[in-house]
Length: 109
Image 1 (cartoon, helix red, strand yellow):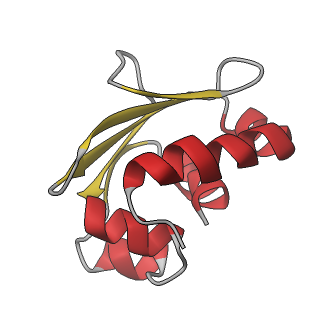
Image 2 (image 1 turned 30 degrees about the horizontal axis):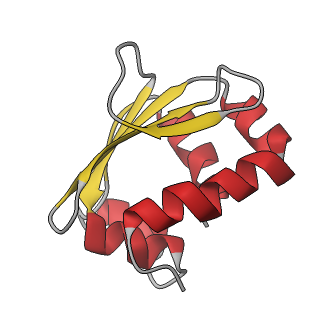
């Protein structure tokens, strides 16, 4: 179980990008995560690079921007929150390419 977003990005997602590079390749775009509350912040998932990279900060030209609370993000990554239900319930907001947003779920869960 991951306790915060930093741990999820630096451990879980970094490991998935390394061990399953095809998932990042399928996204092939810049993705920005805007997390609110707690030790929130912005993170960039750069799937245009090989290997893909994740880093704190923001970037211009993102094809998808995901906004949610850090608390809900941690629940989602730990399997305690269904991505579709989070989206329908307004806990997960997506701006940009919805098809790519669905592929991002494969890296988060």
